[in-house]
Every structure is written in structure tokens, then in C-alpha cells.
Amino acid sequence: MNLMAVLAFGQNMQADSSQKLQPIYIKSLRLINLNNASVIQSISAPELLSRQGSSMAEVLQENTPVFIRNYGYGGLATASFRGSNAYHTPVIWNGINIQNPMNGQIDFSSIPVFMSDEISLQYGGNGGVWGSGAMAGLLFINSAIATQQKPKIELLASAFDYGIFQNAIKISFNHKKLFSSTKVFNNFGNNNFEYEYKNNTYFQKNAGLNAHGFQQVFSFQKNTNNSFTSLIWYGENDRQIAPNLSAIPNNASQKDKNLRAAITWNNKTLKGHNEIKLSYFYDEIFYESNDIPKSMSKSYTFNLSAEKNIHFNEKNSIHLGIIDWLAFAKVDGYEKSVYQNRFSGFVYYKYQNKKHQFSQQFGIRNELVNERLIPIMPSYYLQKTLFKNILFKANVARTYRLPTFNDLYWKNGGNINLQSEQGWSSDCALNFNQKQAQLSFDFTLSMFYRNTENYIQWIPINAAVFSPINIGNVTAKGVELIAKSSYQFSKNTNFQFNYLGSFLTTVDNKNDFQLIFTPRIKHVVNLFYNYKSFTLKYNHIYTGVSFSKSDLSEWNNDFEIGNLVVSKSFIFNEQNNLSLQFGINNIWNKSYLIMPDRPMPLRNFQFTIQYSITKK
Image (cartoon, rainbow, N blue to C red; front, side, top):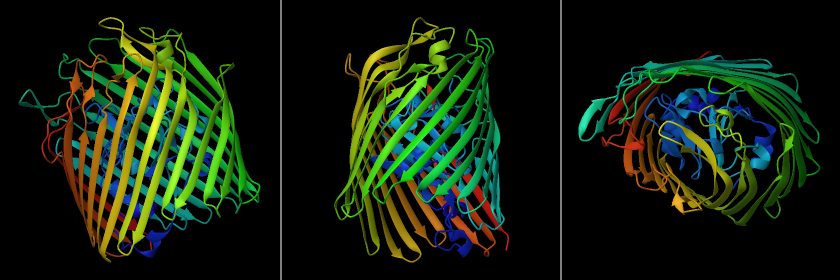
């Protein structure tokens, strides 16, 4: 994906020469050399452009087969890859896992799309490469370094008709060996969207939010072989928590603070590449309401890693690394402060034969957790070109997940005797791509199977207390389809059709019941029409039934919604560009729930304006 295409705000093919420069994305050695999976999906520039004024939750819901568990606009939104839970999908920011050690989650509603330069997804387990939690997939968020970048300012303002506003600015420049990118955002409003309940219309209450933050990237290219990169991402999110439809209002609110900082040294050699990375994360959650005492949760995470990639020749290479991860947490809901130290090492061998269009990769990972050795994590990956346009991929990996701090230590329900989840993940895929004259087509069909032992699930102990237990063995299996096609009518006119589908079961093997909050079916259709500087996108999503009780006695009905976005860009000259965007969300005005008793907005409107200035 071309960063400058994202920042040009839908200018299609009329960008000036400075905007055609290819950026360098900040990626760890593991992502560059070991990012092998049966299915890897990148969110394209048009898909990002259509949601620049929204959150990561909307982008993932509209452009992937991943199910987003959304508790209402502005509320918690987590990802379920292939029937998994939120903590089974690590989020890797510029090569670092940013999952919260207290709850193991990332809230995608709190991440503005504007703050991300590149978003990609890897489907399937890969515990050997990425460690604890990498059981069902991974999501990568990468920043970009635009080489030869002239000083540039980019402005964004977006508004929803139910009182949500977002402002953002990006300033970037390149001077000799130094690159800098600064992003600042503010997201605020009443969030009093309209919803329907029992054939009556209401406005959401106690759902206001005020979020702001910044992201800073510095990169220094000392010489051809050595570079240093520093990253800082800080955010605050102060939001009211709306009661669910059957609850008594309790004026609940939550204030989050997150600081993520990292520095990386990269060194190139004749035979490979070296990398040393040091990072620090701080997470704070303050919760208060009328019916329970105030609660403060704080965690501090330190991560030091060293990796080395060695190319013996054009066919054979190895990749090895060590990682020291240390997290502390001080939480009002725990009896005392807690910590966890993970020291891990991994080694991978990679073989590539370009003549026979074949490659394979296998390796192992071992990890010491608080001086306790966990089982060895092996994985194997195979890729073979069967015919000119048909590629076969297969992957098998052992997976595991350590219980979170909340799982273990929460005073009212934590279970210190929990066992780590572990199992195996396997999948295979066929990819067919064809480009002929004006028509191009890319089709990926994949099948997956995942078995997890000691699966952790929170269950009610009484009316007021939930506690996590190892429920036993859970099996997930299914089929995914990602198909993209485009037709170029002329130099200035093209049409694109995308289809993404997921068909799966995730069952507790004790009773063969589907797990709660896990729909078996999701369909996504995206239509893009581009004419000169005019773009039209229609998105349609169907989500199947999901059960809300483990005995399958209650469920959320299936639903389908449509979203329409129209944009027009104006290129005044090489230095000044303007884009206007108008969106109709839930255009068919459907009443639906994604999570029980958490209403979603009826038809609503969004207007976004973006302006960029580039110095001559």
C-alpha cells in the first residue's frame, strides 16, 4: 500500500510526482522475514480513505471477515478472528505487541484511522513467532517514513449528525538524514445517536466522549547500514458508559490513559540484518459509577528484544531472537501489586527455491514465565506455486495463551489456579490472481482448523460475581473467502468489486454448542466507482445469528446494514489539495444489535473535510 495514496485524500491518479514516492514502513525483522501465513490481508488505500474520520473498528468491520464485538458507537469494540476472543489476537504496533497485560484487549473504537499509515491482518495462529495470545490471527499497525518528503501539513475535520466531532493534524518533513512525523487528534461529543427499541425510538444517553492524543515518529539514517527510530504514542479517552437496555442508569464512566514509546536500532550487513528494540508502555484505567466503588488500574510494561537474520545464500537463511518482557500492575481490584516476566527465544530456518517457486519455513520458540518453562512452540509454513496464477499455502503451529492479570488476580472472581490455554492451529489456502487488459482479479479461498485445550471463559458464580475457569476443549473450523476484482474503463474511470465471507463453527466439545457472541456467518460486499476525482463507495454487511447464553437459549438476531460514501477531491496545484466526503451510515435505517442490549445507531450522516499543504 502506498502511504502517499492514503494522504492524498482520494486524488486517484492525478497526484504530483512528490506524492508517488514510495514510503518505508516501520516493521520489525520478524514481520519482514517471518510474516508467512496462509492468508495475509492489507487494508487498501481506498478502504482507508473512505473512513479517515472514523475509528479502526469501522474499518475492520467493513473491510474484513473479522467479527467486531461492538458495544455501541464510542463504547468498547474488540475483534474476533476466526471465532476467537479478543485476547487471542495480538495487535502489533511497529513490531511491538501492545495488548494490555491486565485484560489482554485492545479497544479498536479508541484508535482513529488517521493515526495509522498501514493496516494489515494475518489470519491463523503463530505462537512460535509472536508468543502468547497469537492463536487465531494478528493485526499490524505500522507507521511510515516518507523518504525525500517535502514539508507537509495535513488537516482533517469530521462530524457525525449525532454530535461527534473529530479534528486531526499531521506535520511531516525530511531533512537530510532525519525524518519526522507528528500527528495530533481530538475526538469529542455528546454521542446521542438515535436507536430503536421495542418499536419505539430513543436517543442514547450518558454516552459522551472526549478523546485526544498524539503520535511522534523520528527516524535518523546514520549511514547506509545503520538507522535509529523512535516512536511515541500517547492517548487519553474520557467517556461515559451508557447503560444497557435492561439496566438501571448508573452514571458510569471510564478514563483511559495510554503511553507507548519505543526506540529501535537497525543494522544491515552483507549477510543479513540486526535489530535491537527497547519499549515501554503505560496503561491506566479509572472506572466509576453509582453502584460500585471507584476503581483505578495501572500497568507498566517493559520490552527488550534483539534479533538477527542471516542469509547463507539465496536459498537458505535463519532468523533468531531473544525477548525479555516484564509487566507490573497495581489495581484496586487486586489484593496486591503483581508482576510477570517472560524471557523467550526463537529460531527459524527458511528455504526458498525461486526456480521451482517453492519455499518453506519452520522453527521453534521456548519461553520462561516467572522462572517456569512452558512447552516448546513449533511451527511450519509451506508455499508452492502450482500453476502460473495459482499459489498454495499451508501453515501449522502450536499456540498458547497465558491468563491475563485480571483472570488470575481479580479479588471478586479471579482464579489463581487457571491453566494456560494451549493447542494447535492449522490452515491452508489457494490464491488465484489474473490480470488481463483492463480486468484484474484476485481470489483467496482458505480453510482453517484450531483446537484449544484449557479454554478460559468467565462464568457467573452468583448474580453479582463472575469467575474464569478452564472449560475444557474448544474447536474452531471454517472457510474464508476473499475476492477482489477491478475493471479499468479508461484512464480516469474504474470500478472495483470486493467480497469477503466467513463461515465457521466454534464449539465447546463437551456439548457441541456454539460459543457465545460468535456468529457463524459474515458476508461483506464493497463496491467502488472512481471517475476522475470523484469516488463512490457502497458497503454492505450481513452478520448471522450469535448466541448470548451458553445453553443457546438466547441470541441476537442476524442483521444486514449498508453504508454509502461519496467523495470529491480538488487539486488546486501541486501544493494544495482538498477533499470533501459525505457518508450515510446504516443507509437502510436498520435497527440491530451486535452485543446484547447494546443498541447501534439508526441511519446517520457524516461529513469529512481534508486539506493538505506541501511546501514547494
